[in-house]
Amino acid sequence: MKKHLRILVAKVGLDGHDRGAKLLARGLSDEGMEVIYTGLRRTPLQVVNMAVQEDVDAIMVSVHSGAHDVLVPRIMALLRERQADDKIVFVGGIIPEEDTPALKSCGVKEVCGTGTSTTDVAALIRQHLKR
Amino acid sequence: MTIEQEILAGSVKRSAELISLIEQENPEGYKTLANLLPWTGGAHVIGVTGPAGAGKSTLINALVTRFSKEGAPIGIIAVDPSSPITDGSLLGDRFRMKEADNQENVFIRSMAQRSYPGGVCKGALGAICVMEAMGKKLVILESIGAGQADSELSYLVDTVITVFTPEFGDELQLMKAGLLEIGHIVLVNKKDKPGADDAVSALTAYAASGLRGNREVPVLSVRADKGEGLDELAQAIEEAHGTSCAVDRKRQRREKYRHFATNLLREKVWGLFLEKFSESSLTPVLEEIERGGLDPYSAVEQVAGEFERIIGVGKP
Image 1 (cartoon, rainbow over the protein chains, first blue to last red):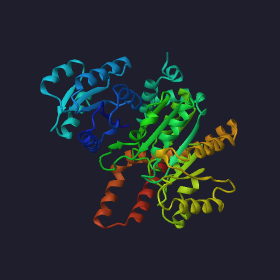
Image 2: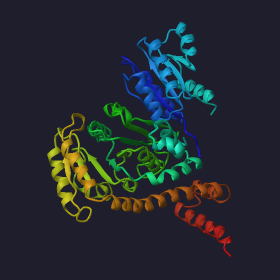
Image 3: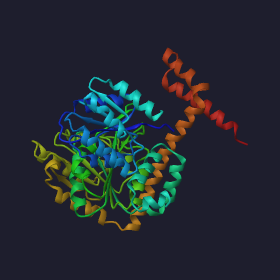
Image 4: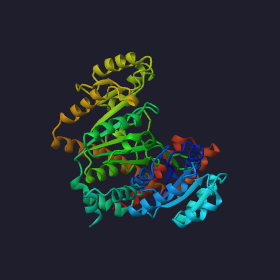
């Protein structure tokens, strides 16, 4: 009876840069995880709906548009609203360093900027989920 | 409210969690599922199969968008393969179901095959039942794009749609056992591509030559991404569903579950066998094969013989 980690890799907002998200999806599945990719330009509500339906353990939000300070808190609020805030959230993409504290204060566990290796992301996921 | 009551009231969160428990083969999950059984069997369950890239997800997206606009609550279960090496999986069907995903009342669940053979996964039946208990009237199960060995799918659904593209090959491919035998509706997708008319004629000729006994198998052509041909398909689906009464359908489904249970049992027994047997008897034999001292057939006979002796010991 093995528990497979289920991960949602999400692109939100008006942002067409998904090379990183696809790389991460591939990398995490190579780590033995089950990865669902949302596709481009989803709304925070769509992302949260998917996370609930798929019953994922973690959500990886990738943002390259600079709108992370609006989109991510919205995702966090919707997760709480749906009582799904047991799912951990990481943010990646182009995130200025000075924005990290604000993201973490709204519940984001890790902010992994460009250059983070997928192996490191996988290790962080396991660390937070204690598996 | 109990978990069962929440699911019957349509809770997406509870239903999703129960599907996870069933996937993990959790005994508590199985118990909840058993409690829900009286409320299952109410949906038309459609299986969609066909080779990789035939357009199964795109077709489901188009169909579900259409049906959900008519107000039907719908569930989709999309199965994708797991890596035999890492056990990981990239579940990429949902990505092609954007319009369906946006409909209220549509619940999509991506599932990994997790080494279960036959183009579906062990938890698929559980997921179907949970969705029926939630009140879904239509449940669509998308198999792995396997093609020729998807018989397992037919044990889980009422109606099978087999999706081809114009490049499926020649008649000889159709004569091979497998894919076409389980289909109730045969589709040629990407009908704008060259060769589509020939493909439809070949499939029609084959379908007319006694496939599935004397039951008629409609052969239709669609272009799923543009929604072309969907009226005819929707009608064929209605007809496939309408020809049997609800009581008959339930009986047929239980008959199929016998087969599914047999296959589940085979998997289970194999797991138990590995658990109990590998160290003592299996490993040395496998090593002997690797050294070249034993061929696989003789090795299996040897292991089976020993296994028989072991279970024979328990007999009075």
